[in-house]
Length: 476
Image (cartoon, rainbow, N blue to C red; front, side, top):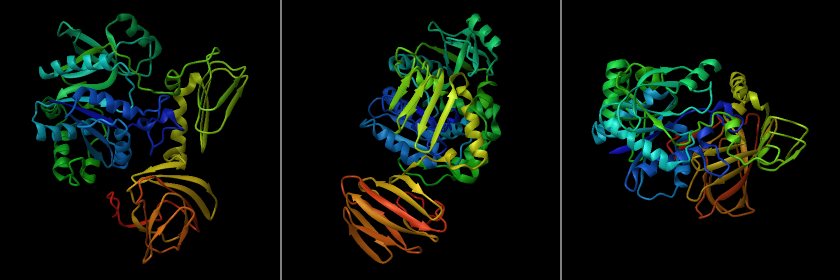
């Protein structure tokens, strides 16, 4: 049995301001409208076929949005399961927990194909061929990694040195893993023909990974066993990891914990296209250039400009007399960078995090299990939001200490609890909710409910909320 395991946890700080802590890189939409996460799911489903199973390891806060992206695939008969982390602890804890869960359910011979949610592979046939090769080596007891043939002296990737050949299809034992090199070293690796880029994708049986963890990281494995044993909140679709025991796991990658120490590691040279979409320059390559090398997503005008990439989510962007720039516009932030320094965008995200700036975590439009809200305007004592509630969805029964709210329905029908008064509100009707009143909003219709919410009060933070009931498990 083959089970793809999607690891969805990277922050993607080099792709700020679109990638943020609460809306990370896997959820970014590419020029074709699909997200990286959806593309990974489609790639996984192609491996399993009808009736297969896909496991996604992700943060608890990203569960509902991930489900929405998977639903876009429209693939019937494919079982999607989630292992939910309370906090990111790197790839070794995530894979240890996944291996223990899958081995308990399907036996130790189940083959795990580990895929990163933020990689782009468009050659599905080539990926499937390489995976079939990797599965055969995994069944022979190897921990298999996918190696990408280098096309340039890239300094942003780790490298794998191939050793002895294992089969007639190019599979080799791994001689060593090496860290991200400088340019001269990367060029030497490229010239030698013995090195491959480390893709961060793997294939092994659950039992073999558990045995290698027992040999090389026994304390981590013991902690992972304890975490799985204490993890409740289980349903057919998801299992939430026990907070205290999961957070106690070491923050370490599977490379450091096992792959670099084991003598049973093989590499499959991959012939398919691959990109980790690690910068705005990489994303720009997905857009067709004009005659001057400019590329654009959204409304843009180039005047006497060359080799410039512009992405805009709403406003018109015009460039005049510029070369080699990256310009990214969102409703609350604008990035302007030299193209050759696009990797340094992560320093912006780092600064914002240090300063506890909201633009590190949130967009103006924020996804919630029930839909989205968009902050339209705010001041010292007021905030105006556009709220969209999906058909059949409902916000929690809640109360605010410091703010009152005025709700105006502009599309659909709202079922509202306001204090002791349940009522239905139609389009162009409204209700006022004083501070301290219990209230709930629900969409009983078959189209999206759209509402304008006007908040007023001395404190308008999102943490001023007391939940009494919630169908998404968020009530304390």
